[in-house]
Amino acid sequence: MMNENFKPLFESIDFKNGLQLKNRVVMAPMTNFASHPDGTVSDEEIAYYERRSKGVGMVITACTYVTANGKGFHGEFGGHDDSMIPSFRRLASSIKAKGAKAVLQIFHGGRECPTELVPNGETVSASAVAKEGSDVTPRALTENEVEEMITAFGETTRRAIEAGFDGVEIHGANGYLIHQFFSPHSNRREDRFGGSLEKRLTFPLAVVDEVQKVVNAHAKEPFIVGYRFSPEEETTPGFTMADTLVLVDALADKGLDYLHVSLMDFWSEPRRGVDTTKLRIEYLLETIGNRVPFIGVGSIHTPEEAVKALSTGSSMVALGRELIMEPDWVEKVVEGKEAEIATTLSKKDQEKLIIPDYLWQAIINSPGWFPVVD
Ligand SMILES: Cc1cc2nc3c(=O)[nH]c(=O)nc-3n(C[C@H](O)[C@H](O)[C@H](O)COP(=O)(O)O)c2cc1C
Image: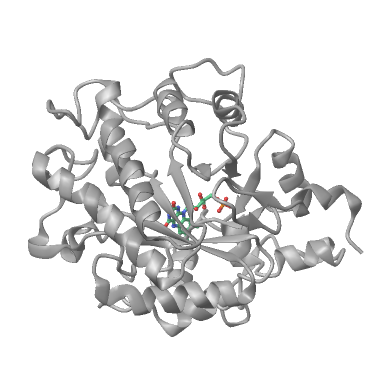
């Protein structure tokens, strides 16, 4: 029997577009490095998602690149061409068959792309400014190319619709292209896409508009559109918490189905731009109000922690690393077996947990990322 305290996790939630999630637990988007070099999804990747799609209300997939020069990871699956639709369809139906809504994360890596993954080794970004600590300077997109990039996000959305996904999440976080357009570090443009904070909002908001336009034109059933953002940058120049509240305020009026922060620690304090009397999550929720559902995330492991996270006013909680370590997280909570939830990873468990090889290697070889024991 489920512990009554965990009931808030199992209230359904209705999105603006009409879709309903059966509970408040979401699988965070996680790159798994397991797709084929041609951009199609692999059997081991499908098995990994199937293993994790039964309990949660919604699975947000690993990111997919919207143009060939946006591939940011080895083993990332492609969304840049209609030839990828069958691969998309396979992924969407394997998640949906287990009971979760399937949301595709759409992305362009910009200056973060490894040069060996992009045509002619040429990376692109808002401006020709290298990432701090990198000696690769991207080429600044022309104004015309920026327009084409916006269209590309729409095209990948159309492919997602045709393939049967329940929605897309626009990846505006973690230093990638959309983030690069919002950042005063990577965006030094002087056209309509840069120059002031307001102008640096132009690209992110144009991507939202384009994706929504495509959904209105092509989706025959309700289709989720979410947006993920990072709260702050470390660099100087770099956007601050105060800047992000301006972005979030604009996004909250866009008629999106949800906003999703990207954090490693749900309870973290702001770094710059606002005072630290409140948590980042508190600032974000205060700015958003009741305009749009919000997904919080970051080092949530137990159902107690998840309920506490919801008590802030977050509408949903996303679990990332925890669902890799414990695919049966939701089922165990429902069955009153929360004491059996694994919150560490044993080096013996790759097969049992169905974790693709490259993801497994990345986890094992990155000390401190996952709580690996023995
Ligand atoms: C293996 C791995 C891959 C990730 N890939 C992505 C990604 O493709 N897109 C994204 O927005 N975040 C990505 N993240 C970040 C997670 O979505 C999440 O924000 C982060 O892991 C913190 O949540 P957690 O503490 O529950 O893991 C990734 C995280 C991990 C562990």
